[in-house]
Image (cartoon, rainbow, N blue to C red; front, side, top):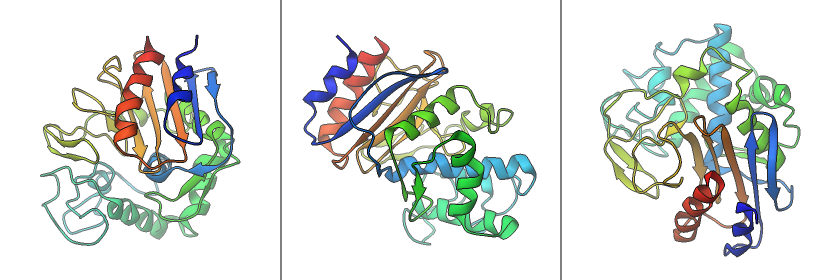
Length: 264
């Protein structure tokens, strides 16, 4: 019996899940139709920004976004800008304020150095090099990607064995601004609410959308459209999920169970 047999019990019409190792997909279930990624898009955007950093187009600690904020603050959700508008709710570096607007600031800032559109930059920097030909950015760089499970699995494989920005990835998945607390959407206040450079870090968070067997080093993201990608570098595994039902109590219940079964 496969751990992925659990997916057939989920209260959704369509669910596609893959377990990925550094060599590629080890097990999968469900169709490969393109579905919205919602906030899992932020992983693509973060990688695009990191590629720009690697090329020298931008630096992590230069000013960007609200006054006093830097590229690093925006990636780590510590710029202090509100979720979806320009309201300042905290000084930079003081709170973990999860922000779609912050990622839009990031995209706009990088384009001042590179030109073009962010969809073009993301395609050239991430999608094309990784062979993710079925994925497109159709809206906000915070939540506008759409693509198939096979592409999300390729992203998981890349994060297990980095090729785009291998020298930057250790920093990207390390805690930025340690000790900062904040609300993890859907799971309440976490103290600390650890985050890397665009990657949410599991650490000791509870409750959480990954499983109790996931190592503290696990990183990734989930999305409001019922999607997630986690990468556990200790286990050497990633798990990618796309569904057609928005995140809610159902997903907070079944995702950790699946994660524990995969790791078990």
